[in-house]
Length: 231
Ligand code: SF4
Image (cartoon, rainbow, N blue to C red; front, side, top):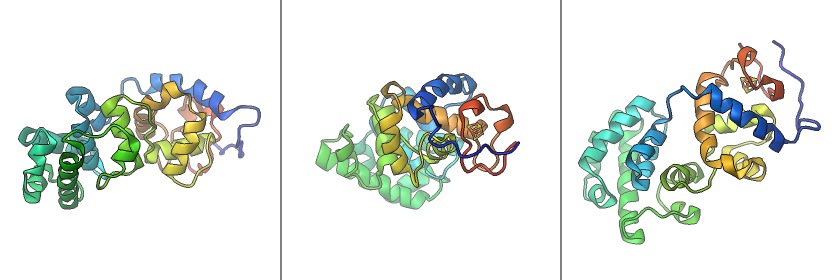
């Protein structure tokens, strides 16, 4: 299949209208797919602190490894106070073999200590405060807000960034630009769920290297921007 011409910005189709049409369809497509590990942990634990820590563990780490590493660490330590009292080495042992486990252990301990000293042991629930924590950027902060607190936010990871640009609803150079573009065009009722939906869609259909465009149920509204190989 030949990639479609550059539709951006969708001619008469407003990006907002495109998003409104595709979200329900993506929901159906991914309904049976496994949820990302951090979302599973959020639902099981209802703990913003555990969401924050498991998000740190999940970077460049497979889902099953994130789940197991988080389970081991949370079996030892249930709160910021518990983790702050652990040695880096002990945290590293718990989260091994997560990618970069030594530097993540350092970050997790620093996070816990700052939450204890500056926020009374509770993870803050405002973006500006979350961004003061060590190792926390907008992606992590948004995931803590949405999955941890159920507050509005748009967590833009590599899947959300890639798919939004392929669809042609945004034209952005990095995830931060994508987040701010989506804040303008994505109906607020989809903010919390969009990350989980596009992560699952990006793993199963709109894959990074060679997406499954020939069977994709949203191909009629997709600009396929930048797609050079497809299945
Ligand atoms: S799989 Fe292809 S048609 Fe579907 S969203 Fe991705 S780029 Fe668009």
